Every structure is written in structure tokens, then in C-alpha cells.
Image (cartoon, rainbow, N blue to C red; front, top):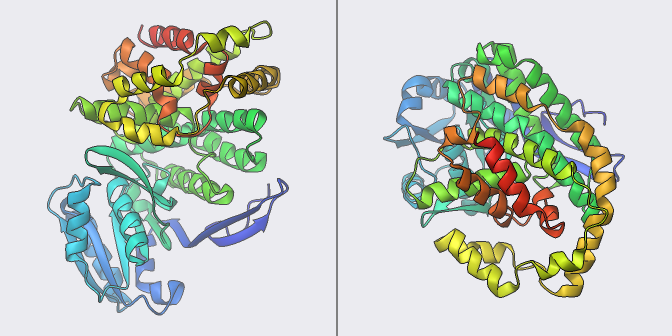
Length: 450
């Protein structure tokens, strides 16, 4: 694929995959001094950008609040402030109410300053109130700055809700390079997982006929390799390397816009991360940064891929596998046991799950027939786990499940049931039809816990 010259501005182009790829964000700037662009929003984004609404926590307000206000003052832009007293903003009902209470009808646009939670909140409120927002990332910690969904915690349960993208993203590298080390490590983790995410996308393409773009995969893979090669400089806070990491994460987000789904950026490793996050919340255990969880779960999925793709499925009897699978009643009972209060959400996510025998056998046969090509394509491309471990270690980040507080049994449970968290086909779903998921979960959990 030839990357469009205007990659950081809204664009649309025809791809050889047969799709028209589009990116709707008007302006993305990742450079030193990017905050200054806030003063030019009228010229760049529209004359209606007269009064902004800054959403920011107390720590960031102390560190960069004056810079943001000075940029707006320079452009003659009015503003008001939604200031969170704590540096830890939770994307929950309380935060939504606070923002809505501070918002008034004189506001033309919002300015979300921070990383995950503040942007999730701004995306959600922007979509519901039809007020555009600008994202000011303060850490290269995730690929979700350009997302169109919000991950919120409602009634104590993580939910992904439809939202909207920012109209602009201004990422100042002089700010990004000073982000806490754990946030930088989280960003690396959220980028390095794209390799296994692409595997899951290709598997669904081969088995289910899901639309797929190899060009998009190649573009993301190139930026992942570039970032991995610069890992040492990233850990040393080299501003150019941090810029490359931020660009990689933004490009990953753009890739999701190109294909209209999260496939280029998230697969089973994200399902595992969501699962262990949900279980931690159920037990009132500490929740780790999403990118850190994704990094460790990427290492888990590398082992899962090795374990599954090393097996010979030519002589398996799918009728026997079906007879040993859970029927609908047994499945629902197990989901209630595992997910507890979140079970209704899981049932809704999996309402199209196959239980009828003929349909189940037909799909299992398709999985079996697809495995030779899957193995041929993917085995040579499985990422080097040791390379990822060395990078995470150099950043002072966890690289083992036990460092996330996971026991061998916790990890086995995650491998078995994480596929239920999202209705998105991955190798874990294929393994269930091949009759090996439980054995794979047991072996990988034992190996990763040694």
C-alpha cells in the first residue's frame, strides 16, 4: 500500500484490497510545540470554534495547564475548565456527571487533556451532546486517541460503547517524552500486540470469509518493526523515538478507521486483557494499565499460537469433539459461574453462538480444512517472545503473568473464557472447534507460570 501523503489529515483512497479506506480526523500533529495549534483551531477546524471546554486533572493542570491556556489566549479562543481534583480520573458515572455539570451551552468544543480515561469520557460525551472535541495526548500510552468507542465502567462493569472520534489530535513530543515510564511501556505493549492481532484477523478471513486487507496489515507491521528496533531509545526517552512510538500508535488508530473495525489493532490478546481486568474488578484487586496487560497477554498468545499450530489436526473426529462440547444449558451455567454479575453482558455478546449440531459440525469442518493454510502462513511469522520480554524488562514493565498477580489457574481460566468477552473470532474460537482449547490452556498456563 502507498501511504497517503496527507496521512495525518482527513483523507479517503481506493486500496487494492477492493475497499475505499477513509480517515475522518481533520488534523493530527505529533511534533514538538503541537500545543500551539490550539490557537489556530478557527482557521484549521472551523469558525465555530470560539469557546473551548478544557477537561483536565489536577496534576496535568499544574504541569501543562498554563501552556494550553496560553495557546488558546494567543488565538483569541475563550475557554472554561472542568478540573478533576484527583490525578486519577475514572471513566465512570461520577465523572460523566461532573463533566456534564460543568458544561454549559456557550461551549463550542471540548479539549480532552490526558491519556485513557479523559479521552474515553470526552468521546462519549462528544457523541451524545454533539459537541466536537480535540484530544491532547500526554503520553504515548495507547492507540485509542483516534478511536470511535469509549471504554467506560458503568455499574462496576467495563463496557465498550459507541462514541465518536476527535476532530483533531495535538500531541506535543516535549510533553510525551516526560510521561511516567509505565505509560510509555503501556504504549509499547499496545503497539507490539498488532502482530498477533493480524493473525486472528487472517484466521477469521480464511475460516469465515471476513473482509481483510493485507495492505493495512503490512503498513501496521512496518511501524511495529520500526518501534521495536527503537525500543532502547524509547526507554531512554529519546524524543525522536517517542515521536515514532506515538506515530505508530496513531497510525494503528488510523488503520482501524481505514477498515471500519478494530481488527488491525486488537485480537485475542485484547480479549485476555479485558478478561483479567474484569476478574480483577470482581475481586477488588488492583487493575493494571491496559497496554501493560496487553503486552503480557501478547506473550501468552505467542505461546498459544506455538502450541496450537504445532499440532496435527488432519485425523481429528469433529463428531466426537461435538459430543464432548458444552450444550447450551451447560454453557450458560459455566458463563454464570465465571462471569457472575457480568454474565448478562456476555450472553448478549454471544447471542449468535452455535449450538445446533449440523451448523456446529459444518463450521468445525471449515476450521479443520483451513488449518493447513493457517499453519503455512503464520508459523514463520510468530513473533520472537524473548525480544518483547527484553524490551519490556528494559522499560521496567511486567513481562510475566505472575507480575500481574495471575496464578496458573487464573491464566488457564483466561485462555478458556476470554473469547466470550468480545464477539470477534480468534484462534481461541478455532481451538474450541478443534477440540484442543482446554489442553492448550492447561499447557500454556503451566509453561507461563514456571
